[in-house]
Image (cartoon, rainbow, N blue to C red; front, side, top):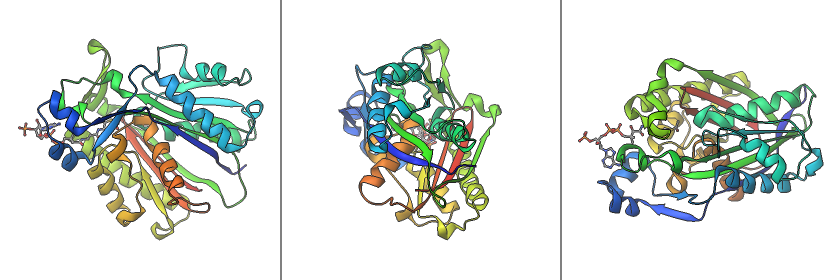
Length: 312
Ligand code: ACO
């Protein structure tokens, strides 16, 4: 089987910054409550940009950074819960807009775990030698399914996109193990309400309990499957949903705070984009370097979860 790794990464967040103080003006909330309960200080809103626009910017950068020519991309997978329309998919829009060959493309929906599912799916085609390069994008415009009159959810979400080009890497690098799962019994804890334009409804307490347990467990599983010890892990990149959930998962891994990626203060919960946004942030600031062992771990509506252990 081929070793699969990330050849290039790209990200995009829209310019419009919406702070906790901005929420104080429209909701009965406070910067203090939001910061203490979630770790979020501000988030970005896409306004007139669509999910495909965010995805396009991130994908373009990922391809440039990968050094892979457009002609050599063999497949596109877009993880999103907020495609521009039901169909055509964001993936087909990217195929056309990026000027790629008439390659297979699809959107994949696993809510906030979408990026993990997308990378694992794309990796299968490369491991088996079917394709050489797969573009995987996590992009969401959650602001279009946010109920801005509901203070318990509105303050949590933001818009953004992240993309990677997957391809074969040298021995010792790339994906070492993964763990995916779902439990539909918890579907009612987090869903898009079709009777209200698809707006997000959430039982915060239940999602919180599930996320802490599942992110912790899944991180331990992939570490063991990779034949590594917790001390071998250089960086934990959790889905950025709530700093308290992220810290609880980290504690379960018995990892120190300085080993955890966190961009939640800047971007809030950007769903399928949050993990690539955090990886790219840490690559740029030197906290993720070639040869580092990473754990990427996410959870989301479904309920779904997943994690990947890889050497960067
Ligand atoms: N500002 C001020 N007060 C608020 C706000 C707000 N924005 N939101 C809720 N409150 C109030 C509630 O009304 C409640 O008041 P009450 O006690 O008078 O009824 C009080 O704060 C406590 O509310 P809870 O919902 O019980 O608080 P909890 O400790 O559960 O924290 C939170 C809420 C932050 C949403 C938490 O449940 C959480 O983080 N849950 C998980 C959220 C999450 O990760 N979602 C991800 C969803 S999408 C995805 O990534 C898959």
